[in-house]
Image (cartoon, rainbow over all chains, first blue to last red; front, top):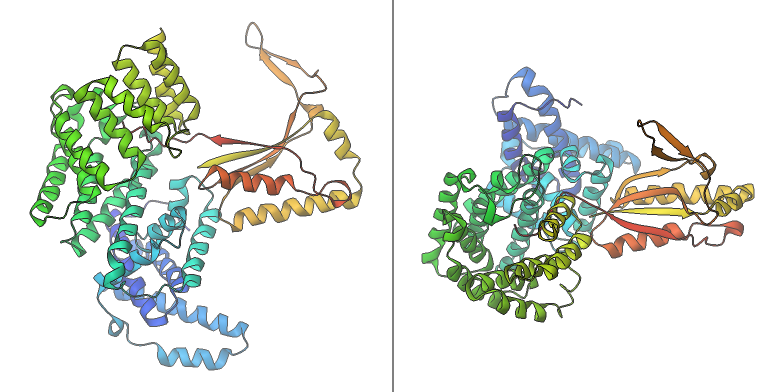
Length: 414
Length: 131
């Protein structure tokens, strides 16, 4: 297998066609796990052949044909194992229809695949891996690189995820109207996790991981095109655009973290901010407001401030108040405390943190200490701030974050 | 999140291990082989290595001009790393469960060895400070 990077147009085409072809193959053979393998193999074959032979006239038909052939081979060998080879193989030859005849709605197929891959029967890590492969069209090797695990481990994770789908009997069809909203939330959550996995990693040496954010945005864009009236899908897309717009300013050349208040705002991607604001604004007349829209609105308020001191904190606090009413997430309460500090002063915010400290989900989390340290610093208690920056540093699982927190402690104790 | 599972032992522990019967040794090796395969099948395996014995261990410091100064004398109580696994899991609890399985590797007579396994998080580049 070649490891040379593909011609980008071919790679994009393959990624785009993956869920469409997969939908066709699943409809034909009713076996998600085997179909997914067959489409990945077809895609790898295309990646090898197309750059040399040129694009086939109908790339989708080409991929479908190859995947069908792989499926037939798979069923033959399965049948052979069961000593029924001749009948089954014959049966398959007869069953294989003209490729395009099997087409259904590609759009529905992509959605159905997302609903399957992001089903709550899967662990988040499995759902992420399977979504990236079956819907995103990434290879197992690419996903393994992005998550810094051996390829064999990622292959196993994907295969177990497929087994879970099989075991739970999730049908290959759109969820019922009653289930739909909740299933869509699960899809959005997985897309959010993929985005965060890429965005939250520092830039520089981890460019492969940054690609995950791009992929999450691409997939969310597709869902937004398929569900243009869902305000939370739009909200998530806007949130990603508005957050990712700050990527260049978020770390320095050494990969060190730079907090929002100290970022060089001329590095923010104005075009992406404009697009995010437009996507978000389009949801407003539709009425329904959800957590992703609110988070996007908060990101937009930050993005619209030319200087950190121009930030409209009262508006951010108002948005956090709404968000807190909607969500039981203690991280929301923690972020809200920062807005409280900016509007009403650190003492009031520190009181909120004393209450949050009793929340078991947060009690041992480094972010509680980090926010507390920041608030203590604002309040002029440098000894307390140093103590809490150090406490946060000892708890974080991230090296750039630990370096950042220790640097804050050193700055104040210097 | 990734965790490293470290199996440690004193020189005395290593010396005991060297005296195990062939059968006990084989049972332990077979267990480890199966355990490693299980980790791979479960989709959590990242890496594993076994280390040379403490007899070969040297403590190295840089001398005046940067030349290595080595020391091979250690207190009896010092614990040495025997080997490690790195796993990629969803929670510390899942890492503890895997460590407990490694700890239960058969010792002399086939009974679980219950060797202590030190579990530590491997730092990533992921950050959720909300910066």
